[in-house]
Length: 73
Length: 143
Image (cartoon, rainbow over all chains, first blue to last red; front, side, top):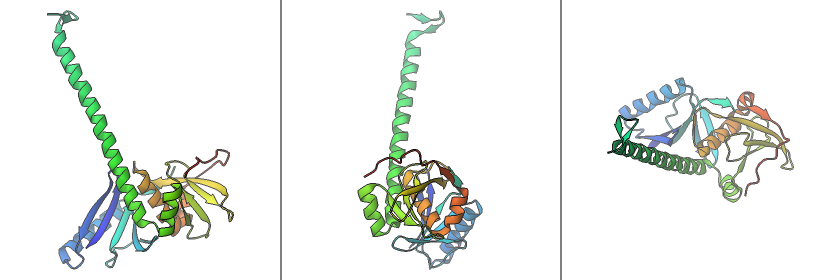
């Protein structure tokens, strides 16, 4: 199972999906687009402590985290 | 039977006040509990995304250090909402303090993870948004 983790006030909301399921994959792809269009940054975990920003839905990613737009504090 | 202001009976007024007070207290307790759960959840996620060395540092000192993806500089990320990103020199001395984070009221663990990802992958972009703070104020002692 792959996971999309969306940071929010509850900590995060997780969406699990089976990448071999075409319908689930389409839903995950749509969620990715909806979030990034709304200004969220997406990053995938590439290894221990290593992440990479992604601008397009990554089929191979086991775990993608989304955080809201950054701003100066 | 006593009346308030000559019209309202005192008993129902006091009962209503008691109910409202209870509702406020219960609401506050629920809010605190939800906030604590959110913080724990965010810390769990943060720890999953840290390297073993970063995690060990975090467990020991409540902060961890990352390397800027563009400059190679070291940064210390402390658990705070304001000015919690310290730029370090080669000796580990703080040379600047930066403040940026994701929009919204996210738990601290989420803020720290977003900062780690941003500094490692888009250091210039993140610092372009950030506010640079004064070094006159000492960072809090941690760990």
